[in-house]
Image (cartoon, rainbow, N blue to C red; front, side):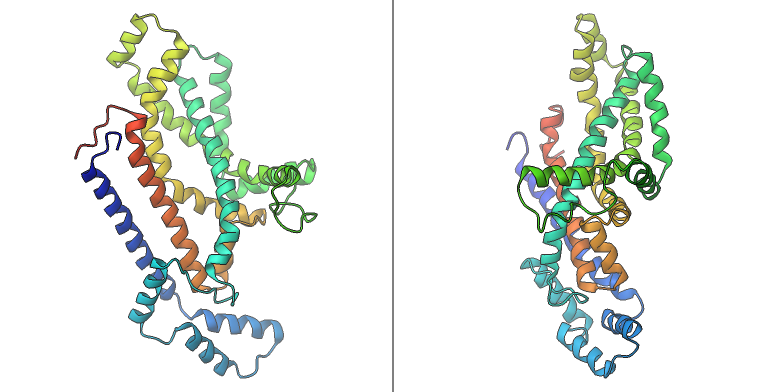
Length: 337
């Protein structure tokens, strides 16, 4: 197992599945704490739009019976947990007969692409900028420009998205203001034109996330680089006459990057939740827009399903990082410690 003991692997897997169980339980309970129910809310919206819905009481009771909302809470809980174990997230109450799995399957790839690319950019750029701020061989111009660019860190993603839409979408008309791809494509397709169109549409949403995030990683990397400057291995590397750039990436960055990797895994959930408003602003076809719509429509099934998928993604990222530590830093021993 490449240095990973069986005991450590089992403990990490137990923590992973315990996290999923606790998360699923909270996801089941929290939406039911809100006043009202999704069926009544749906009928109320129909009544507002049409002015009147005939036999609304019978319709509400019929739909409650159809989705099992009249069953005792513990029956609903075990049904929900059993569905998760079978990979069945149930039906969307507001978009019946569509299933939650179908809706998530259409939205998740877009969020993975958007957040994944944005994460790669701000993590790489942020850590590189933080390293260059400490490196004595960095040009003075870089040490001036990097702190100036961190002013965007104080801007919420919502305002950053609006600013980018106004400047690059409305004034300069360089990028589309909404949607994940153009209307000229009837459906997603694996062609160069479609991929280029998706990248063109996704540039502004990705930059809205990158601009407000990379500064945190730069500051964190700077702090870690400062702590290792006086270490014995750094003095030895300089005494051996190694090239400065080799010392930078082989000794400094490699030893400073481990806490950053840990922080990245822990922040995956925050990144996705932060992209919700960005996706709503750009009307992007991702999980953010889906979650926003589910909350607005009080769609229990969709709220539960999307939230569970996001928490599972975050927990899986933490698990992968934990198991990857020996590859990042061989000093780490996983033999039960």
